[in-house]
Amino acid sequence: MSGSRHLEAARLIEWACRLVRFPSPQTALFERDPQVQAFLSGPVVEVLEECGLGWRRDAMGNLIVEIAGRGDGPSLMLMGYAMTHPANRMERPFDGELIEGGRRLRGRGLAEQKGALVAAIAAAAAVRDTPLRGRLTLAITSAGETGRHDAARAVLDAMDHVPDAAIIAIGTSGRLALANKGRIDVEVRVRGRAAHSSTPWAGIDAIAGARQVLDRVLALHVGTRHHPGLGRATLAATAIRSWPEATHTIQDEVLLTFDRRLLPGDDPQEAFAAIAAAADIGEPWRTETVRGPHMFPAEIAADGPLASAIRQGCLAQGVEPPETFYSNGALDAGLFHSLGREAAMWGPGNMDLWHSDNESISVDEIEYGARGYLGLIHAWCG
Image (cartoon, rainbow, N blue to C red):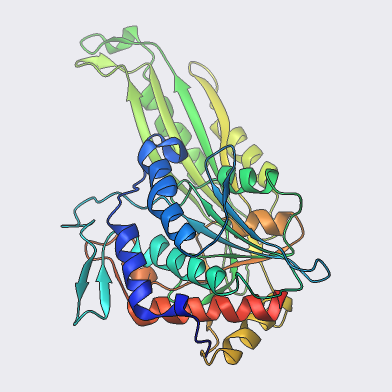
């Protein structure tokens, strides 16, 4: 195993505690939230500078660390995240407690974003002075819970190349995601006419229209394709709101949100068009269907270049190569896939603890994750 001081347990614990003690939860402001931006410019920059890593920020406030190689080898990106799930019902979510004899850390985001982020920073710091053939980029984005590619696109727009491969550093229970579904959000707005509820015949009930839309959209057939790892595409309703927010009033507007999951190879525009057609219920209602955020699906081969480099690198570091799995969730690996690059989610942190009331991660998980990332950097860029 590498003896780099950046991978020492005491250092990893200190960094993880520092990051989790600075809250950076999702709010309605998403990537523009001042707390998320302050997390990046505060404790994350502090850790980067302690490691001697140069950094810059793009138009969305994402941090970009570039370690230049000789230029004749393939390039790699490790992408981590700043934003976490809100505290919700978790008690002491930002205390950064050491539990189980100091071998486990408890706090919001540790199993999902912040444990993997510590591992990625440690791996990048460990190769700062290593003569690499290829270029390494560590990107720490203001996203993490947003369900869109905006922050990742901003990072790529600020660079002079698209990396040949990317690892999305997020907790996957230490497993490598060979594929993940994509997603489009679709909003359907149903408009009627308001009236006092004592005379409902005087209005056009938008709730009644929304009920028809809900029934018609959820009855859609999403296709017969069956992916061997991801199964079938899905369609679900995820939100419904109505207006005006007043008592004893026939509602004149209802907004429904649908989540349509995509398999690799699915056409997102075709999926949207089918929902829009089903939502067009006609008079006396007026409907408007809008396509919301879209995330691409991703897929790599178990014996392909990236997965093979991960296995090779882990073995070189004395770390057990990761098991593989398939994810129904959507993250930024799909953006790189859409650009013709290999990308996958992989990182320390138990997925079952995401958003839970007792989110935590072991020190061993972070250390093994850091060594796995370090092994991949050497195998891909070294």
